[in-house]
Amino acid sequence: MKKELTRRKPFMSHAGGLFFVLPSIITVIIFVYGMIAWTFNVSLTNKNSVSVKKLEYVGIKNYTDLIHDERFTHSLSNLVKFTVVFMLGTLITGFIMALLLERGIKGEGFFRSFYLYPMAISFIAMGTVFNWLLNSARGKEAGGLNLALQKIGLGFLQNDWYVSEKGAMYSMAIPAVWQMSGYVLALFLAGFRGIPDDMREAARVDGATEIQIYRHVLFPQLTPTLLTVLIILGHVSMKIFDLIIGINGKSYVTQVVAVYMWESTFDQHNYAKGTAIAVVLLIMVAVVVVPYLRYTNKQEAYR
Image 1 (cartoon, rainbow, N blue to C red):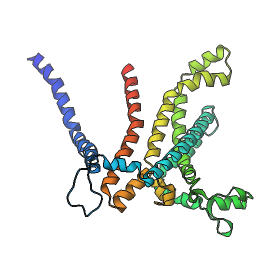
Image 2: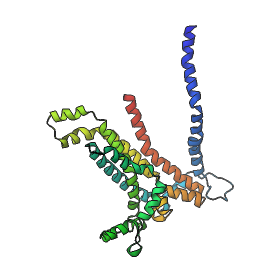
Image 3: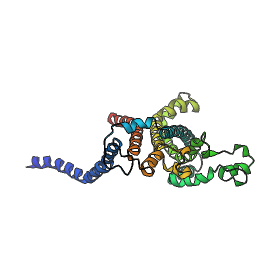
Image 4: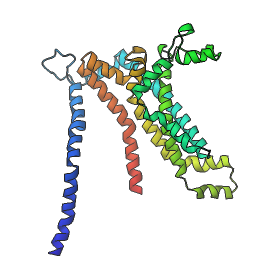
């Protein structure tokens, strides 16, 4: 009798746990994977306007059309420019700030909060502010950064910012770098603090200088943190939408893939093209995130 009870307890505990998470599982299946399947299904049809009554499957035609779509290639090019500047700028800025705080300074708590504060601001609110800060007007009508440069005698540094097609996406990366640098600082600082002090002391005993300790002892230990930072920043940059809308709306000059997807789907009512762009964007994000998830799962298995 006792043996039967002990056999039933694990089963009942597992069944109870499954019953507890079942609503979440059903919700994810319907509203995540179900919607992904529905989106992919629409992308294979001819639903390119509201007036289409009879749906017909056209295969991968909507995807092949994107290759020859100048608007899509332009938005993809803009996204690449934004991603490169955003990732490099955020990575370098956040790492330098983490390095300075890791060395130990007075008021470290204040600086951590100060650097992390931009994370509390939404991209759309920040975009509205930077729409004024990056005003391209000059002379008497100058405002924002151009006005500040003009007042301090650095008028030659005034810029067209997001108006000029050549430098528009680089300008768009400025507020994104400002917001995410604090987050990168926190990740790198946690990485530094996670390194045992014994490793530093052992290196000092062996006669290593501080520069050598950082180069050969500390920095190699930050490789997992660096990988995490790159994955997160790449994921954020690929899905960027609200910041672009907040600063320059749906302008062709600063249009990225997510903005073009919105315009195709909700403005032009070309649902087939919009969902095809959404699937391409999903694949781009998956290419970045899935290898990282596999890597982290392997690391957890080894532990």
